[in-house]
Amino acid sequence: MSEIKTSVSLYSLQDSYARGRLDVPGALQFVASTGATGVELISDQMITGTPFPSDETVKRWRAALEASGLAPVCNDIFINSTIYRNRTLRVDEQVELLKREVCVSKQLGFDLVRLVSDTSPEVTEATLPYAESIGVTMALEVHAGMSFTSPLTRRWIEMMRRAQSDRLGLVIDFGIFCDRVPRVSKDYFLSIGLNPQVGEKVDELYAREGDTLHAFGSGFGGEGSMFPAELSDLFRGEVDSEYSFFSTGYENTPLEVLDEYLPYVKHFHGKFYEMTDAGSEYSIDYDKILGFLDARGYDRYVSSEYEGNRFTPEGKAVHDQEQVRAHQAMLLAHIDQEVADV
Image (cartoon, rainbow, N blue to C red; front, side):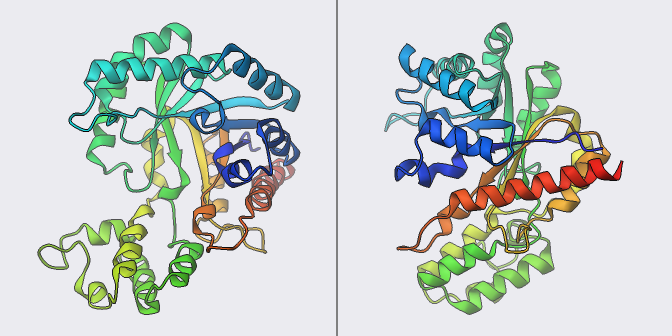
């Protein structure tokens, strides 16, 4: 029986929000209408005045959240350590910023915060006593491009294991389980001048080498270039190298890697780029991933996180609400099928 619960990241609805199709209460009501039971927030995006929202702003958010019936699952937070031109913020300065974001998250009703992938382990560990004192869990996002092989991610995980606190964990992004480069990405770059041969070669390399992040990082391609010659020889302009670099933002990680880390996982980002008319995600095998999680008794949330919006050609509409609804339908169909099979 599936114990997976579903939520929606309001990141998915950023276009509807920015263009006025949905306000915050409307976004929450939309999420509830999809069948999801939880919501994920980016407070910097939708809570006015963050990280210092007024009491009235917090009150309005809490009222809208209560009216929606949704559970506050996770707040995605950031630390801007490069606000000065001449230096990076010191560790103690970053700690104060992180404490503030954790405090705001608690005020908004969240007991879990997602730390962006490059949050330093030193800053996190120094903030941990405060997070523990107010009951907030800090979880590092393991994201494509900075997955389990990233040195910074490894250092953060080493800190987490050493600290052995229930208030530390991981958020895993499904973008590390891409079987192929998203079709909408290639279509977008083709619309702005990508050489079709480059798109085809990237697909070939991704399939042949496992993914392009590891293929390009393996050392072949000549001095001064991260790209193999069989790809770079096809470049006709900047868009070709840009697309090739962009293709390293997806990874094809073996699911079995999760067996080591699942005890630390607090949440999953159900990243998706394109829901097809057949009701499946074009680049990511959700049946395989969800079945894997079911078999291991995962009982927390998977949050719809739509990222195909960034690949909408100029002048075309972003169908974020339709895509989110289709993604939730896919997740819920899997859960219902698992229940029916018991």
